[in-house]
Image (cartoon, rainbow, N blue to C red):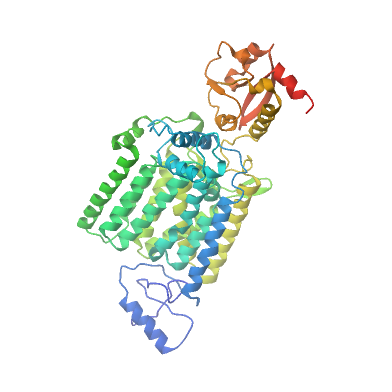
Amino acid sequence: MVSGQELHAWDYFPDLKYPTRSGFAIDGGSGGDRRDRHARRAEDRDPLDYCHDQQQAIEVTLATVRFIWIPVFLLGVGLRFLDLSSAPLHADEAVGAKITAGRLEGRGYSFDPAHYHGPSLSWLASWSGRLAGEKSFENLDILTLRGVAALCGSLIILLPLFLRRWLGEIGALLGALLLATSPLLCFYSRVFIHEPLLALFTASALACLGWWMTSPTRLAAVCGGLALGLMAATKETFAIVACSWLIGLLVSGTQKSRRQLGIAAAFSLVAFLAVLLAAYGNPLSFFSTYAGYATDPGHVKPALYYWELLIAPKHRAPQWWSEAGVALLALAGTWAAWRNANPFLRLLAVSTGIQFVVYSAISYKTPWLMMIPWMQVCLLAGVGATTMKPWRGLVLAGVVVFFQLQQTYAAVFRFPNDSRNPLVYSPTSSDIQRLRNRLHALKKKSPAFQEGRMAVLGNGYWPLPWYLRDTIPTGYFETMPDDLVTFAIVIAMPEMAEKSGQRLAATHEAFFQGLRHEVPVTVFVRRDIRAEELLAP
C-alpha cells in the first residue's frame, strides 16, 4: 500500500517499473485519473517485486526502450566479429584447434584431467568446422574457431533481457550496453579459448537463477542444473562461480522456504549430473581434475594483479586504460541492492565480491579468468547508473560507455597484439606469420624443401604446429635425433638453440625469429635449400 504518501518514480519509465517499498512516483502529467491509475497499479503489485528507488521520471514508451536493444546488440556483435582473423593465433588457441581437429579427423576426444579443461569447446568448434566443410587440422580456418568464441561473447549481451524484473528496464539496457562495449569482454570474446563459452553458460545459469527466484518452479531448477552442467563441461573453474552464488543466495534475504530450496537443489543436481555423464562418460573423471590439474609457473601473479589489470589507471602511450568507471557504478548498484532489499542484486554483489577475492588469492592468474566476475560487475553497474537523478545517471553512464568504447577500439583494432594493450597476454609474435610465408614460398620454389622434413626441438613450441601444419612433414622432439643434419628445416626452442647450433654449424644457416613475447626461436635452413631460396624467381 502506498496511499497517503507522495508517489515516487522507480526508474526513468513511470509506466514500466514496480514500486519500491517507499512508494511509486509518477511524472509527466497532473491529471487525477492518471495519478489514480498508477496508484491502483502500485497497490496491486506483488510486494516481492523489488526494484530501485528513484526521484523523477522521463516519459519514454516501452517500445522505444526495447528498440534500443537492437543497436546495442549489433554494436557488441560488430566489436566481436569485425576483423576477427587479424591477430596471430595464441598458443592456447592452437592447442584448442588441435583438439578440435581430433574430432574432425575421427580420432575422437579423450579427457585429460591434468590439461586442456572440458570437452564442450572442441565439441562445439568441431560442429562449426563440419558446417564450414573443414575435415582436418590442415584445412581448419581461424574464423571457424574464433567465430565460436565471438558468437558466445555476443549472446552474453542478451543476458540482462532475462533479468529485467530484477535490474529494471533501464538498468538492464545499460547493463547490456556495458557488456557490449567492455574492453575485457570484447577482447577475449575474439579468442578461441574456453572462457567465452563458459561465460555464456554462466549467463544462462544466472538467467535461470533469476527465473527461479521470481517463480520457484521445477522447470527453472532443471534448466539451471543443465546450465551448471554445461559450465562444468567447459572448465573446472565453474565451481568458484557456483559456490559464490550459493553463498550469495544464503545471504540475499530471499523469501524461499527450505522445502523450495530442497526441491530446487534435487532437480538441479539430477540435471547437472546428467550433463556430466553425457560430457565425460564417468562424472568422477571430471572431479579428478581438482586433484591433479597441472599449472604453469609462468602464470603465477601477485594478489593485486586483477586490480592493476582492470581498475588502476595506466598510460601506455598513446592510450589510457582503466575500467574504474564501471567498478564505481557497480558499487552504486551494490548499495541499491541493500537499500531496496533486492535479493537477486544482493546475490550478484556478494558472489562477485567472493569471486574477486578467490581469484586474487589463487596464485595462478590470467586476464580471461575475469570474464565472469566482470560480466556480473557490468550488471551491477547498469543498475548503479539508475540510482542517480535521471540525467545525471544517463550522462555518467554515457561517459563510462564512451571511455569503454575508446579503449575497446584500441584493444581490438589498434593494438590486438601489442604489449601496450594490458589485455594482451603472452602474445604470439608477428614473426610467426612471416615464417609461415617464407616456408610456403620455399614449398613452391625449392625441390629439396618439398622432399625434406622439418624438426622442432624442445618444449613450449605452441602455436608453431598451427603455422607449420600445411608445409612439409614435421616432427617434434625433446632431444636431438641422430639424423638431425638431414632435416631441411630445424626450429630450436631457446633451451635447444646452443646445442643444435653446434650440431648444425656445417650444414645449416641460422636465422632468428620471435615465437611469443620474449620467447625467440632459432630457425636453421639447410644450405642447399638456402641456395635455392636465393635464386632469382
